[in-house]
Length: 457
Image (cartoon, rainbow, N blue to C red; front, side, top):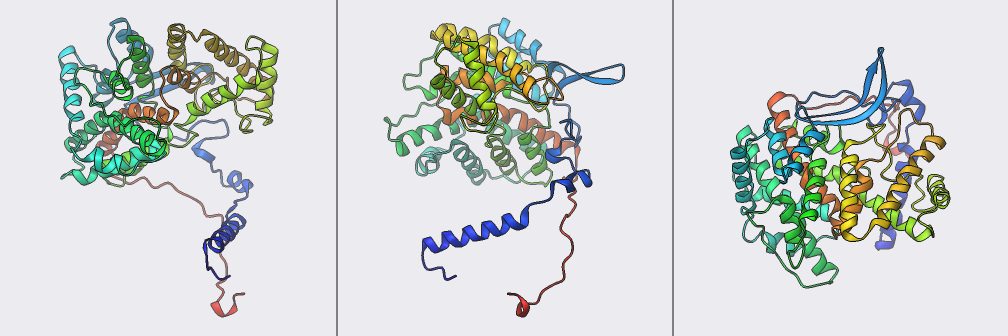
């Protein structure tokens, strides 16, 4: 066909898409025949072992009489139970994200002097954003997707770094610390540019970060026009950052960071790749789906206290009859955890407290009912090889709603937290492996006889 205009081009690309569709599908039986574990998970959902790490561990099973059985979930950062870490900084009435970041990076709990020096280092790096960066990079090319905006900013920072390609441990650590410090600024400023230039919703403003504030406090300070927030709001956001900071080496974005790192590339490229992974709705965007699902439930369930009405609507969601017709009750279930997600349990306690402060206990009660009923429904209607429970996404979206955070920043806030884990894994990969990751793929396409151009129709 002759391509004369945009309409012709669109039809041609559509035909090429159909061609790939026809030739790109692999017979599902071949995956079984070649013993290929889709998604790097065996038929029972257990991840294929691809590496070793000292950074964190996720426990969801225990061995009894030589047999693996589900157990209450546990999460460890550098060998320390996340419950113990959170209990200490919460009881000590201090913010925990900077402390946990130090632990993840260096493998040791900081003493007061080490922690103060580390906080001062991050504060100094927060001032390292080039003077023209916000004007020339963020303001002049706003994006309607904050994760793309964040990734672009990270890649642009490469151009400002005279030692961008230096992969020595000391230089990579310096780069990672700068990115950890700058992620809140790049995310919030990117959102403000989007609000002003693309949504035209309010005046453009920039609040510079304050040295004396924690990461959580600075996010609220920079995001809100009046810079005001309550102590509880900052504490809850800080806890969310702590719980999202790391989750074993097997999650998609961390694996991406390590795989790209193994090629010998620079820090900015590795972190941008991890951001691209986290952006996916199957990974970092899950709490947005939870919030959207609850918006749908609130519109379609008249009595939020009626268990039967809630169960009836959740059954429709499971049966792909309503909401996004995916058949998923978002926020319920996890690839690893079975009986419980320790992060969700910790976050739920503070979700209730924040709900009381905000006068939203009716909403909290609905979340609790949906959690209870959904677990029973899924266990009854679907074949589950392990237990099912609420995951961290179930409550984190509700918390961000109560904090007045825009949904466009939900996944960037995840990135603000997870950059700590990515950085630790990048340095661990550089320190312990000199080989590029190269997984094996079997080719399912049989050899064909070549057809000369003159014989093709």
